[in-house]
Image (cartoon, rainbow, N blue to C red; front, top):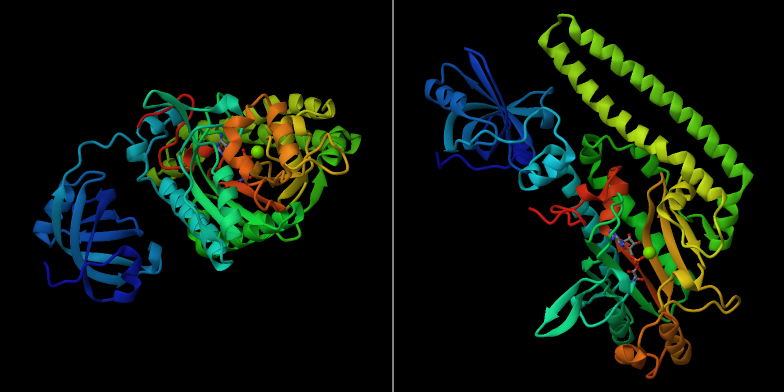
Length: 501
Ligand code: 4AD
Ligand code: MG
């Protein structure tokens, strides 16, 4: 079958009425006495392959296949408006590469734990592949953005002798008898490259021994960090805003089918526009405690409780309907709806259970605390675009942030909170460029300035105002895909409770 060209499924529309060979995996199979339908996927798309009984050999082989078997099929491309991609393959020849054992992931709903244990196989699902494609586009867009602006890519080390962020979240590594750590951020090294090249960025894996089991935390995640010289906090915010708009536009332009597959509300993404709202930490605290916000949150809570009641009623109604007899396709449609409803009911129930407490906490927020995940959710839900919160209390932020010139309790930092409740996706700041203030800040955090001597050198030899930020790739993917948990945004998530597969 070698004379027939091998094509990818996403190229088929260019080969109407021609013979091609596809190679892929069986994503679905249905057959009757007269015809077998194979759904073949090859990573570029899915194609319905039709094998008629008169093609005796191909038909027999097709019928022997199982879910996830690997095959090569040859046939003629036929236009069909109803088929995804606008065509299907009329098969003459089937070449079986491997008949798969019974695939552990079936059509019935599986729990997250089971799916995560089988992550190496779950990657093949249409949902996961859609998420991974969006992840790819996001990373590519970030890199394009900085490349177009003449930033130089710097690869910062992964093994690091000291803390870049919170000393509580370091992973220790035995380095020939000495303690060293997996890096929490490339920033400190990036700052020194910034003093060499002006505009730089790094992109790599970062590690935090987070003991938190939230939907936003991984122990290994990827961060994209730019750093710019001769810049203040406003420049850093501007850069983050421009980059975010660029990335959102790229995802909307290039991932429409993936977003649709994921059920993402793209209208919410289309509403994102510059300039993004900005407020200081002080203003955020005032907002969290305000009676206005309280009234709005209570009204939302009541509305969501009603939605929950409606969904529960619909769930019961379907269960009742399914007891009667009906056509097979109707059973399938109702079962799918039932599964989706169960998921959304469970999600909403969990959310509603904690929300009243979060509203109370927001009302009682004490100045000086860091914003928690729930506070960020509340704030970010008040706006259509991402929100910049600036000038946090020094005590809750990292040592390297520049002290405010107007209020010594504050630092010149920003967090960018993604809308729809997603919360912090970017953290950044202007850096402390003054040697004495930086040494004092390091000591105030209980760290030893001697360990940072090389970093302090940057303040000894031609120090300049500079700053940058870190974008968490997984949180960005979660937000842009509309997911509820970061664990689905990376091929093999690492969390406190999971290191396998
Ligand atoms: O706010 P963070 O800790 O900032 C830094 O690391 C700075 N050194 C960055 C810089 O200024 N160059 O982390 C930056 C971003 C967060 O906004 C979040 O998106 C992500 O990294 N992030 C995490 N993502 C997943 N799991 C975790 N445990 C994360 N911790 C931070
Ligand atoms: Mg942060």
